[in-house]
Length: 167
Image (cartoon, rainbow, N blue to C red; front, side, top):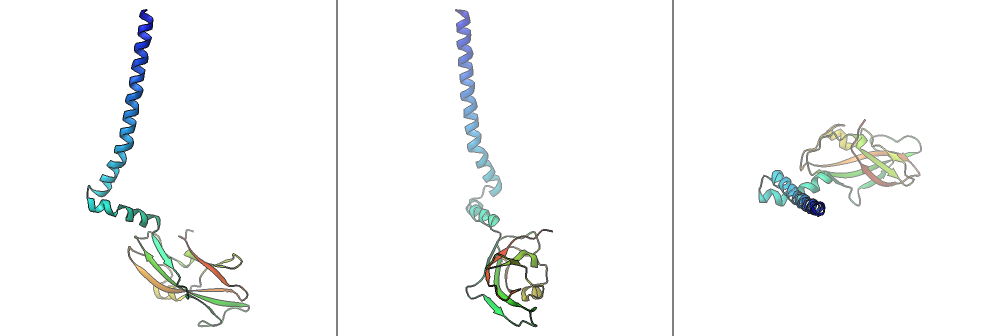
């Protein structure tokens, strides 16, 4: 008899410990994120309201666009292209939504043609002549400029890509 009462007491103790562990785990799941949010915002309701915007800025630090009529095909741009090639001049608007910790260089941009071939802008693009071939963006900086590409005569541009360039 004493053996059975010892086992039932051990089972009851084990059951209570499992319940306690679940309660502690649930409390941590609720309070740790709450604590992190309070620490990030300093307890300020105004900062808390700006948190979704901050997360959006981190996900998309640079917003860029080419206007609908922003692509021009040229046979002359301060000189002739190589034989069998043409120039593509792309108008561009860049907006930094937060401070960018890397340099914007010509290799950040790539023009993709209708066959999927990629081309880097020429270093004599108006954007890089105006701002140099390596520039940095701070939060809320807006840059308007033009990129110059040289592609084969029979190709047409499909889209423009922008990525951080790392050697």
